[in-house]
Amino acid sequence: MELSEAVIDQRAVCERRGFSWRTVYYGFMRSRRHNLRREEDAEVLFLDWHHPWLFFLAVGTMILSCLDAFMTLQLLERGMVEANPVMAAILGQSTTAFAVSKMTMTGTGILVLVFLAKARFMNRIRIGLFLTIFFSIYSCLVCYEFVHLIKDM
Image (cartoon, rainbow, N blue to C red; front, side):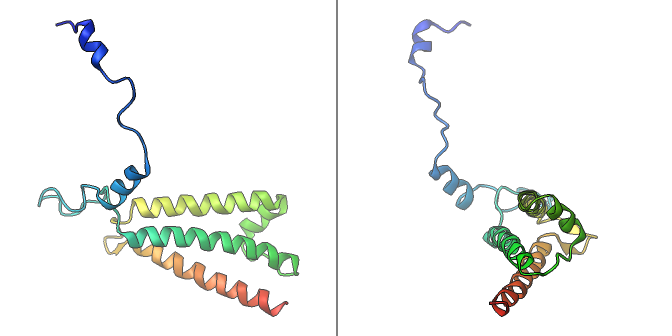
C-alpha cells in the first residue's frame, strides 16, 4: 500500500518529541515505574524512578568532593601533605589533572552506586546505603579540612 503525496504533505515537519524542562520534571516527579509490575518480580533492580534521597546524596557527595578538592589544594599550599598516594601522584603532574581525575572518579562512582541502588551487596546490604556512607565520610573530611584551614589563618 503506497502513501499518497497528500498524506505525506500533511505530516508535521518538526519533531514533536522535544526536550524541555517539562520533560525533566515529568521524568523526575511523575515517571511511570515506581513499583513492581508483577508480583513475581520480587526484587526489581532497575526502575525509572529513584527516591529523592538518592538525588540529594549524589549531588551532596559531588559538592563535597568539589569542596574537598579546593580545600586540599589550599592546605597543600600551607604545608600539609596529601595522604592518598594515588592522588598525590596525580597531583605531582598538575592541579588540573588532580581536579579532573577527582571529579571523574567521584562522578563515575556516584553514577554506578545510584544505578545499582536497589541491588544488594552479599545479599544483605543495599548498595544505596554505601552512598549514605560515602556522603558521611566526605562530610567528616570536609569538616576536618575546614577546621585546619581556620586554624592556619
